[in-house]
Image 1: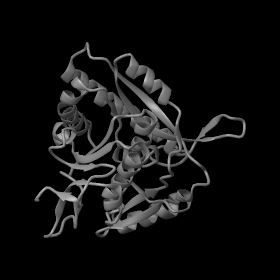
Image 2 (image 1 turned 180 degrees about the horizontal axis):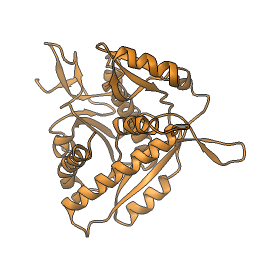
Image 3 (image 1 turned 120 degrees about the horizontal axis):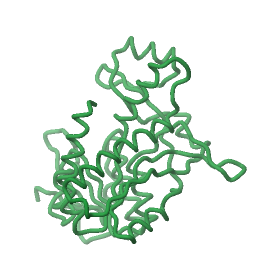
Image 4 (image 1 turned 180 degrees about the vertical axis):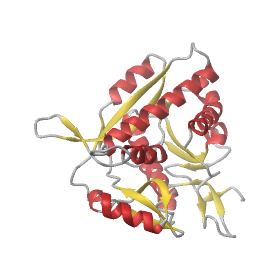
Length: 291
């Protein structure tokens, strides 16, 4: 989480995304869990009340959006239109997610330190191979407030980075207030893709494709599948599961296609030459890359 590491990560992302951005109308979203976790730790180093998660989400979104826009401009040149905006999503304060936090953020702690933070701050933790990580609520985003803004920027010829999202709730007055939560990045991206009537929805990560029996000797990488085929498989809900559901939801709602693949393979994923493509229907069984 050093500045140099984040700059390098953004530069690599921009290098891989540049060819797609040059030839397509693109909206980019991103995750912010590690950055938000770091900012949360920093906020606790000051006397007084620590910053709220919605504040920290806005800070993390601004930081990542700045880095991505800068590094994309370095790849594409100053004449390419690039715009970064901070997206707010409406969530339901009564969402069951608030009663059962599941989204992990920030660094790993040893048991004693995690217990101390639980006692002092009221944080929830989950254990990962003997270490502990903070959990926060991940309510389902219901609607974006900036969809029309993104549409206007796209119509003007700009590539858009929709940073965030920052969760807000609707007040009885019709106004909005921030919410202590971290909506899932894939669910948010799928919602934005649906609201924009996007031609396709691609989730880029650090694995080549979704897989059956991931990490086991009989692992098989999925090449093409329908939502029904994928929902019959149990995926890890901390990693691939939310991506599968987000992709399936987009395909179900739009009849278009979604994909999951490696960031470094983005051009090949777009062409169907890599990654997992989710489609509404096709004859036959689920396809694998080792067929």
